Length: 394
Image (tube, rainbow, N blue to C red; front, side, top):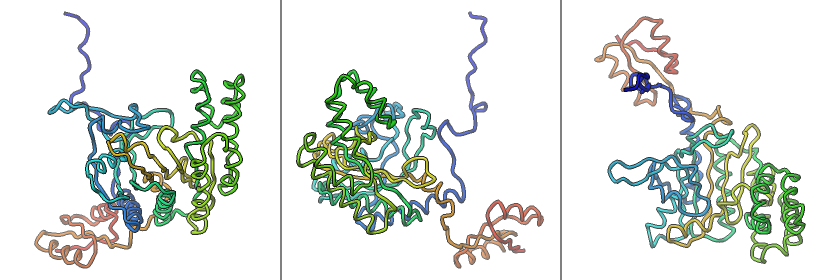
């Protein structure tokens, strides 16, 4: 037998009491504010006919990996002890919505669904510290028209507006032009070029293509289509004519209509376009967007067209959707109005405090019961409970 010390097994009594890495608790007023934000967003979605669904916290692994753009590295997996199936916590709700649509044949199209909840993704990279992300969003399935893309963008911006976020910048893009340009990049250079594109570092992506002027020229043309959206969309036919087909040209040019609509309706401060945007190229098939707000380090909402994903579920239907980052919105809207509901501590013996507390609740107040105590203790308790006064029911 080895004379080494036994391994330091962690017993329940010795286990850390903090949440796992990348997870956190939300308490009290933070929860109320988060729910108020989600309610406002879901109400905006409902005005357009989006019906809310509640999806399972985990799925079979293969369900979450179906369709274009699924990344196995995002998933937190575990083995079902009853069935021995490999399951995974949801990292994205869109595949779950796709499963819902695919398993309900005969659903009238377009099908509009909304959701709200948490997704869990493995932390990757320096900027991915938080593993649990709170989202609310919409999916519009079975409508191929650019009108669907405009509706999803409009309802997303209205949901942000209803949460007090108005001074936004929208960035539009389209997956096809950059994908066509990247098709001319040799396999050995793809990673280096993609890295340069992701960092918006022209020298970095041009260097691997120094001996391939045709590929470099195509990428340069696409990346030059960046700036104010209506101006960029006005140039796409002249720049992309030899790179993409006529139908795609029409789709890209039609983004100008989205830009003009949201500007006319006061839903955005400005609308930009960047056809050299790499983010989402593995997932989106058509027009996509990001929404930025001053003070947020990344997009507060994003979405776009993903016409290939449903085919992985056995139904070949066009689809577009968007998700709002509730954590980002909450950080920007710390002052979300919760309403002036009076909070009162009712202290005393049960037979006298309970009827009084019940009457206060009938009148719309929050009545928090507890036993009698000293004035100092009741004051501390009321402060912790965010109650403005204490009533003694003796």
